[in-house]
Image (cartoon, rainbow, N blue to C red; front, top):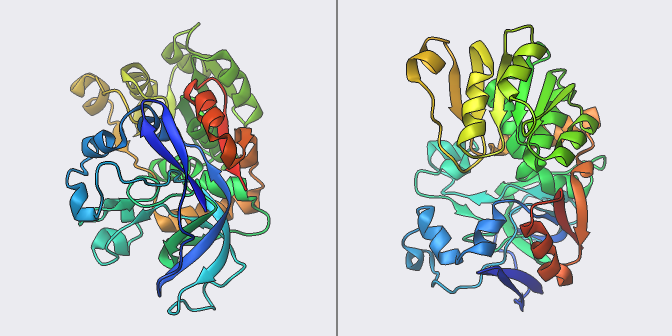
Length: 356
């Protein structure tokens, strides 16, 4: 099979790999869609080994890796099972099942793994597309414990989005306990932010979308935002106060990254406001008493999602007809990887996906 490998310095290769075979508890998934995520760009732009070390993976040799070990990229995989291991119960997963993949592997024994928060594994999680082979290839080997069934109503592309970007938005909405009583301000209207807009609107919340890119602001209305604010032309906090009768939003999310949107996400909320910090990048600079304690605000960090909540997200999307496919503006074949990441690197469009 062929797979995409990042080499850093905005270089990648499409290499040949042996077709995988399943271990006793594994499945082989034939890829149907593999999404492109903004975090891919760290490995595309920089030496993968250096990025791994910055993320805390300092002893690569203990994981059977050298610094130049080719790892297939892609951590938004979705496809169909074509083989299962000898220990896999066919009542649970079988050949032909449509599945999306939870892209972390842990020890399966610590409290975090047992509760489905594998990325928080006490012994260190392995991330597909980073430490283990990912979905930018024709086939992928994963333990069946990482699989979630994909109903027929949900496309493979949507399943790929849910496996990271859209699932991350869902996880943050759960952390905020968003309901139809809420006014939610979403800062940053890239794929994660637009997913948050879609999902929160489907939950009945009044959503305010904020970005500094006019085209993204315009798209937010199409995704269900009741109000939109172009942060390059108006002060988002002032505009949110106007929209809410001077009260502020009940909750907010930073999906943009950077110091300014994080600060605005806090200060745009009313007393007792709830804020989820989702985007990687930037630091939070606020006045502890004036902005947090005195306002009784709650600030949470939200790192992707649990495997059970990923399953819940799939079910919610299916039952509510959320059109996640609309996130994708670019569809690519594996052989177009060079052009695909060159375009994606410009970060001027929407979301890209490899289709097989």
